[in-house]
Structure formats: C-alpha cells, structure tokens
Length: 141
Image (tube, rainbow, N blue to C red; front, side, top):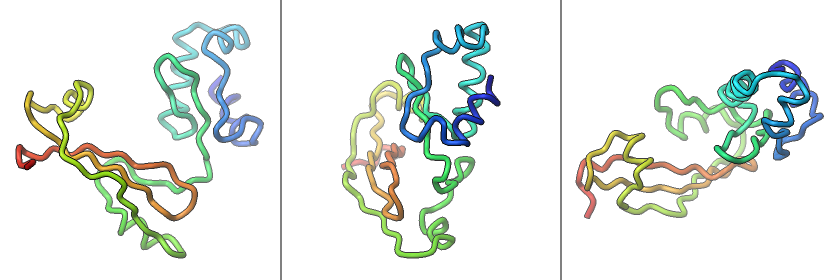
C-alpha cells in the first residue's frame, strides 16, 4: 500500500495540495487493518510525501521542493549558498510569548518559561511559512 500510494504521488496522479483518501476509505480499498494504514501513512509522512494532521485528511506535499535538513541545525544562509538566484528571509513576527502546553512539552520547558515565536517566509520559490519556538532561558523582556 505504501508503494502504491508513493507511485500515485510520484507520478502526479495525486497532486501536491490534494488530500489522500481517509483512513477508512484506504482500509476498504486495500482491505487492510487500521494499524497497517497508519503505518503506511506514517512512512509517507516521515519521507516527506504527505503532511498528516490528527483528525484531518493527509495532504500531499510538493515532492519537488528543496530538501531542508531536519536532523541538526543548518542556517538558512548555509542552505541559500547552494541555491542559484536571489534568496531572502522575511520576518513577519518575532515576539516573546508564553508557550502553549504542546510547545512546553516539545521543548521540555518549565512552567513560566517564555519562548521566542518567529514567523518568517523564505523567499526563494513558493515556500511555506517557517514557524519556530526557541527557548529564551528566561531572558525575555
């Protein structure tokens, strides 16, 4: 099932931005268990082919996008040096905020710790917004 869905995405039968069928519809189509469906969708998500959202349909991502590293930190300047043409970072929001419970858990923060919320656009090709939450080590003013 993973390879079948992958082929549909790579051959543009399911285009970027389109929704995949629901887990229920995939179960019926492939006569597979819910667990099997979820594992296939998780693999597609981990390999950058879809964006999963809990309680919502999975969206097919643009597989022709730039390959940004996710393990380890790489600056946009380092990535931009490999890209031909003009590149620019446009910061729309940069503010010190009290994070919600999900962000606290992800960053393993103590209660009362603030974070820098940064929302920026990487202007190179049609690119999605980049949202970041950074621990401020209690230095927000």
